[in-house]
Length: 468
Ligand code: NAI
Image (cartoon, rainbow, N blue to C red; front, side, top):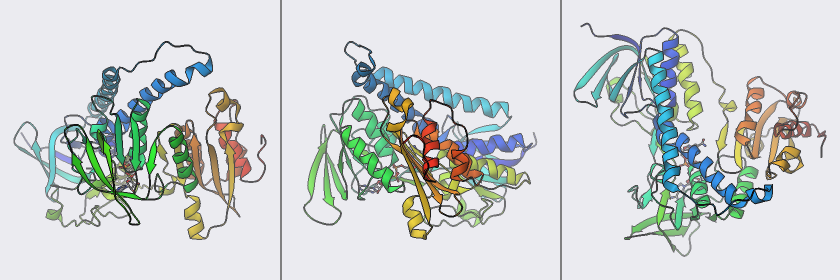
């Protein structure tokens, strides 16, 4: 049988890769996707965004049933945790979701190869097929979408039992008495919240003097205050220099970053959440002259590497390590390969933290605007002034709109509060269209809704909020 000649072979079946494959197939390109996991969906669907959101939702309901229902006039008998069932629910959500991606591959007639793919030469990908043997794929274009892996911390070896990465933290067989989290980034705060809600004492150790690096400082401060009120303990400006695993616990050596006395922190489980690193091992990049820059695959503004016909998208090229950023890049790169033009406005990519309340941001932070010397107006509006938020007992938080002082163009929006991740979306659309704060302010918002808080913040950017 003649060997299939592909137009596109995608290496990596996460959100960047599988979306690239779908878009390429939609545009009539003969496409194959190579993924070494049995299931598609990458880190995000298998051991990241989706299982963590299932646990965040379940644990939020558990906490609400135990502590908040009574305030809404709902009496419950003792609320009990069935962790095994909660974890099974999460596993079922993941299984359904990855099955959905499989279906999309079939629907779009994309060839699926289970195995590790590597570039053997220009125009050829060799797959170490999971079932055994090598398979060579001839292709005009290659899209690398291999994502990222957990970053390790020297002296703290992950065993996925007592010292876990985010993967292990999604499947702890029992609620730890004390969970120590290293890193107050997105993973640390989300998974720390899950286990605190389920009954663990949680201590978060962070190198910097604030949580959620990269987010607007006011949001970061507010988030830390709220999580502290919820019962989380923070040790900021502190670094972990070593870990000793005992039979049932782990002892961490923790030092102040500025120097001073070290202390020991004992925990039953330690979660290492100090970032992720691009995954480029065994891809055969040297065979086609691609050299890494700070560990990432460098690409031009068409997401093409130095090697013609070889593209890369997602975590492996740097920038925000977010599934939706990878998806957009996957889509656009397929369009470029099909001869269309494509563009992504990296300033209009939202970042969301799914704690309760949620935090979300898009565009520039106040700190970035100050540093760049841009004059801006601030419009802020609190959740506590919104009737729907009061009805929901969700009065914590605010929306902050940053608009250019002269043109009123929206430069950034930062939200902390219930459903922030959904509320940010209209701001992303407005920014995509180059919108002004007044555009949001003059747009009719359904009443009574949390989105009215966004509208009021946009009005406030021009000094004319109505309900405050
Ligand atoms: P992160 O980069 O968000 O945070 C890591 C934190 O660890 C930083 O605050 C850093 O200062 C701290 N750190 C580093 N070394 C340390 C040390 N030795 N001692 C104490 N603290 C230390 O990384 P994270 O939370 O691991 O997440 C990885 C990636 O996954 C991120 O890019 C994130 O955006 C993405 N992600 C996104 C989610 C979402 O969109 N909701 C959810 C989960 C992850």
